[in-house]
Length: 187
Image (cartoon, rainbow, N blue to C red):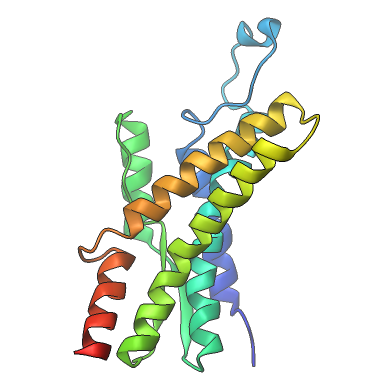
């Protein structure tokens, strides 16, 4: 069995690159004072920094949906949401202060209600785990570099936001799939 198709790998790479670009203006790496005055059209270090902070939260969230479904014996395929990524790019270009979009999703074969609730919950649970890991590292790690502390602090904030946002019990969020699946399973 193939874990990822070429299309899924393409979609994962595309989603990751677009995420880094969308959040490039919002998530900036710390700069030296002299560097602040040099204007560049595109800064690869800032792009890399934005990728390091945002991509794990979104990519691991979606992959956990896929792996949970595969674990339960269901067919699951990752897709980049071309409309969602386009919307995110549009909001970035118009410099919207609030960017909300769905960068990707996992299509899962018909699943029993409890399996549906489980697979839906695994994405947000991943964000909660990343939030806790970043919080513990910030609290207990000794001698972290300034950049590492900033990455962990941003990782913590993004993952808490994604956990809470995705657990809203309104379609199309994961929280609605969890609530509906549990309701159908037990009632």
